[in-house]
Image (cartoon, rainbow, N blue to C red; front, side, top):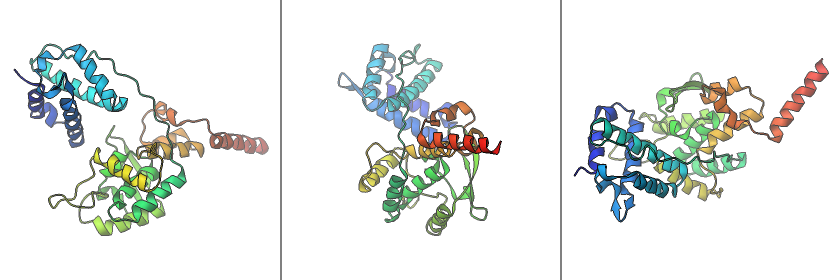
Length: 298
């Protein structure tokens, strides 16, 4: 009997897996570990015969994962489908029982940070050396409207201090953006470089592990950030990932054109910017004021 876990170990040694980006490898390993620890009739998925998993069991597993959030469950489902597709290609089994499970649609998040709340977070984070790097990750994500994951992996070679700009290659679609660094953030980065410029990461974990400074993991960072946000007295609804949406929405409200917004966010399709287009007072006021100015000039 070949277990699901043994199939995964073979997959991790395959060229398919080795050719993935390091970040993707870490993500796959994490989601599969969570999947394998899930129990069906008191037996963990990882210890079951890989060929014995039925579509009904796959559906029950997905329902269990949904209890931790639909986006989380969909990540697990996507990853285990990849594993079973590999198993089918290698003729370990004939069918992928997870391929026919219908995934649920999650409601897009619309939560935005208030500027006062952002300042509260940064005040608390920057007041303590042990949390300063989390604050810097949040600061960069908001200032540049970038994904938190890209900010935690940002390296010093991306920062051009003499030109006060940053070059970011986004991990999701490999889009490149070139962004200015405002004075406040630039001062913070210069101070950060004095303290952490001896290694490659802009905002690593503040304590080395095995003598090496490493970035926060995508799973540990939200936990540390939640603790920090609680200390700052912020709402439990807020997440660091909402900072990119907040900054982008502020550009929309300021009347910035879609093309210019895309040059900041790295979106390749205007439709991707559409979720940020909200009917707000600020947007309406900008539009009507512009119309009034145009009317007077003509």
